[in-house]
Image (cartoon, rainbow over all chains, first blue to last red; front, side, top):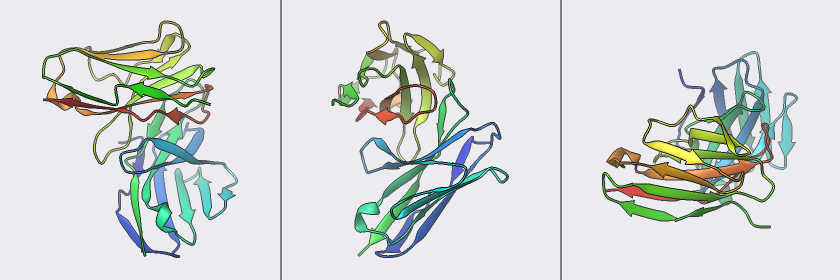
Length: 110
Length: 113
């Protein structure tokens, strides 16, 4: 079983829509969780860390459900510039490797 | 300040040749990671350095792949006897260690003909 699983999409949504992505992880010992954004032919960049209590950064909200071992990303009021691939990333703690999902592709349509 | 840099940005080689890919991390970052990314996939972990030592090399696919970081800064990923299946984007990332944010370089696109 893969360490991290994501629905690859693609998600095609109109501008202004709300879209949500989920990601599941297999190892209950996982301690740190992140969403990275990757534009076409570019390197991944951190979008936000995911905290146990959930956290929000502008139009983006991330949540963690440890019992069900999934994390989510909600994007409100989608912009054309949000079009990218969103990567779910999990780490088991200091000294351990990061595990990346395959990414979820989002295209925001005018 | 300067981000993570990788050279070359593109490398085309023939099957069976040897290649070296270089990563220059952000100054002061003790942790350095190498990943390989194929089209439509997320980055696949290869190796992780904490300082000069390889803390985890479990992602290296076979003994044709080797990486070094002799002075705890610049790292080189070495691939011997390249195969067509090695074609991918090789990404390097650095961080302050632990599970803190990784900063990625632009990658080296390797094509093995």
